[in-house]
Image (cartoon, rainbow, N blue to C red):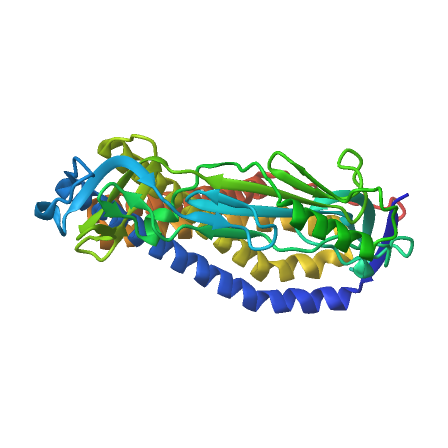
Length: 417
């Protein structure tokens, strides 16, 4: 059964909140404009950096010998990344010869979900009905049930059999033929595979003893169940109960990789372009230099569009916060505020789009003048078109009012006069 909570906000409180949002709106507009301008510079500089890097990139060739003639040069190389290190999980004692070893911990817990429906009331007030529902789910951390809203679930038992944090360990010495990988390249190796778990029998017995000392169950019952790459802590992995814990292990194995980086002695570092932007990239498998640079360009393009949309959205929300006071003032009559809200949405959308275009155009004039001027002309044409359409509409309304027939009522004379 869902639990519902009804809250009411007065008209005065709504006006106060709307006024407070005006300042936030200006901050969001400024942040959006700054983000758009910075992003265009970032996109152009990254593009130029990639062009410069590709123009000087050389093939490293045989990675099993040092190439002193390429020291300090930007290179592309493909080869086997290996390590002799055995990585260990500090809690469960799981070991593996790997580039990386990680564990992910999940807890079976009661979880609260909420959904809200809001409606305006005549007079300007607002009523919000919040519905709370509860279910048992796997979560990334223990859930504090004391904050639940439903009295029936508030403080419900949400203990855990074992609490341990996620962990990731990384090899320090990774060889690439005659070369060594820096942390920046090791960190980019993320082709994870399951790590089958084999617990030391003595440690398994120790964990079982700890579980039985904390929880009242029969000695014949087992709490710890290692299966493949999962350690399940609970009585029955096929029927989870609140408090059970699931630990999943993964590893990154030595393997073939391709890199773009600058050679420095027997290792690598970031290539730094003339504009200060840097590049050091790794991909799994044998990937050509051209394909790696193409991937970098596509990533740069995708990030550019994402930040453009985010910047325009910030400007839109900023104007919404500013103009929301007008909508709130009309909340005394909800149908009027709904009409006003549609108008405000339209105006804010147009303003955000036009301002976004202008900012991007100005940024392009700074970073790539030809495209910037073209975009600025497009933005100006859009502003002119919208202004012209608005003027024509006003003229049509005025003409219609002037041409409308005027009814004149003549009062008949009184025959008696």
